[in-house]
Image (cartoon, rainbow, N blue to C red):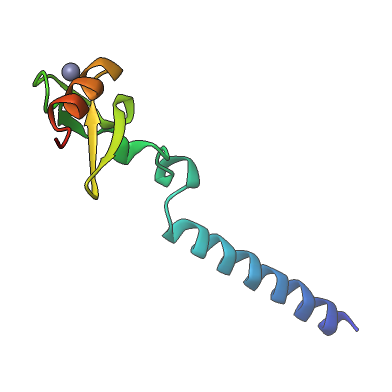
Length: 86
Ligand SMILES: [Zn+2]
């Protein structure tokens, strides 16, 4: 009976050590987790006024299958106006 308890305790110790080793092999979630909008923080240039701004703060526009970004609605409107066909 005592041997059985020893085996059970040993098994749980083995599991605990295994979990601890696995937890140690990967970085903590707080450090590895990156903000969802990180990719949008890329600096891009406004094709109208030439100013640089974070992509996430830009005004997006789908134009002829291309995704363009502008610093403001005004620049977007200017671009659309100047590229208007006919
Ligand atoms: Zn602009």
